[in-house]
Length: 92
Image (cartoon, one colour):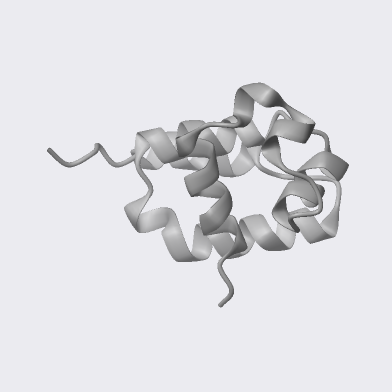
């Protein structure tokens, strides 16, 4: 069974939710949406939204692998969030 894709309205809300104060985070997130918007699933969107609850500094630290998810928030140390984090880290 394939996973449901996020609809356009939910995607737009998620993009708005993902705006950050640090330019470095915005660059990771912008690249993520450019690459994965057409194929983003509801599960992946939920995992990304969970990452957005982190502070800007913690988010940057996990994206750059300076800290693990378990170090910044043990509740985020789960498969779906790791999958999205890997997607965020993918180079162009």
